[in-house]
Image 1 (cartoon, rainbow, N blue to C red):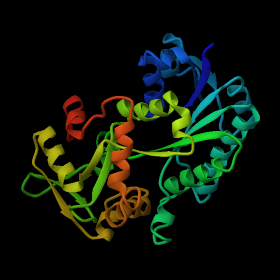
Image 2 (image 1 turned 90 degrees about the vertical axis):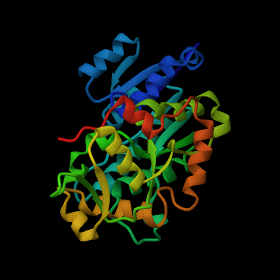
Image 3 (image 1 turned 60 degrees about the vertical axis):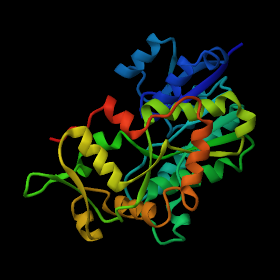
Length: 311
């Protein structure tokens, strides 16, 4: 009998990747029955999932009652939270994560795969405290580790998709008609890049295929590290436009952003000074890439499929 695998965020980037990987995996698709947990069961994306014979259920992460219904009869959970806004963002996101985990335990779920992130506050020894979305997920990981449930953790790298979906970070036009990607970090600052839509599921799939091996482990998920200079050069090649990297002051970088100025500034500073995942980032990425269930996309390959376009 197939085990029920409940996936939160199944209509989003990483959740859809986790779901589609199982659907397309000859072994895992026979072992697990998929249940998509979403806020809107009537959305277009939810309806598409139903056509793939995926069970779609409503799940309100702010309601324990709703979660209990969504997780009834579930064997394994892939769980994630999206960042909250406002002065209580950390507590709100952590509270949502704890609620999912607590209800999973109450419903007898055997295994939880949690989408985590590195604690910027801890890695920087308190120097950087504004990157709440990272710190909240890391705190949730710590909490889940204390619960009577088997668990494993995916710490996702920087999404390749972000270079297409975050226009406020796009290169800007210079006086000579070229484009400038301006940041306050060293030209050699490194980003562990991940094709979230195509590849996040390959890491979750590795855990699902051998849950005992990965119990209590954290996979640091990316294809490999790229310097910000290399990223600018690859975007230039893809777009057919001249894009160069320019290091500016932190104040100038923050002034260029419409929101989350401190979050982006401190987050990028972490990558530059300490490494995205902290000490040994490059080795951690290589270890995880070696166990991924399938070939991972390079940034070059991603840009061939999704050419970078400037407005």
